[in-house]
Length: 247
Image (tube, rainbow, N blue to C red):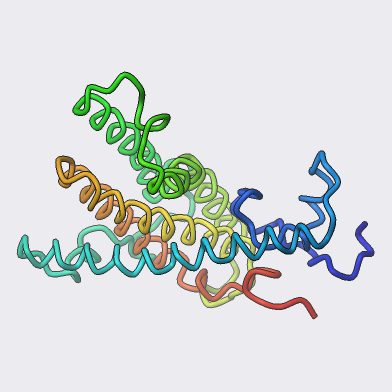
């Protein structure tokens, strides 16, 4: 199977492990090996096209999320630049000998996963429903809830791997683009982007919990900014298949 010309080498190294939502399953050796059911190439391509449209919609939601954070900051008299000054980690102050699991970005990711659980618990308690929001929610919110839940515990291990990779490659210049640490950090950034987009939709749908939702949005935005400082070349990393067409 590795000799098939339509496969993209290494595409699975920097993905979000969400095959059901991937637009490149027909090009992924890992997916085809792990898939229990044989699927025709044509069916996979149709499946991929549908998922591509889903992520385009989520990209539009991310733009709205960023606008929302800026508007709320302005209403509260907060300069958006202050968010950077308060929380972004400077590379000069960062200790490269620090354990990756105790890295401030990793810690923030763990805090986020707890904030998600607290938000769902608060909504369930407020509505006093017989079923949890996870099993009984408006159909229109299904995909956004899937995004939040899929990435809730995904961000932390990715950040730990990225930080560990940076420690091991401490001799590599910060502007070196194609490193595993940058590729892993980029995946984490993408999942944060998508989570921000999903939360922006829930913000409008649950006005009784605006404060909690906004806290999550700001927390994720600060984590995203911090990562971009710690890994300044991460966004420029070219992931096989996702960011470049196969040769």
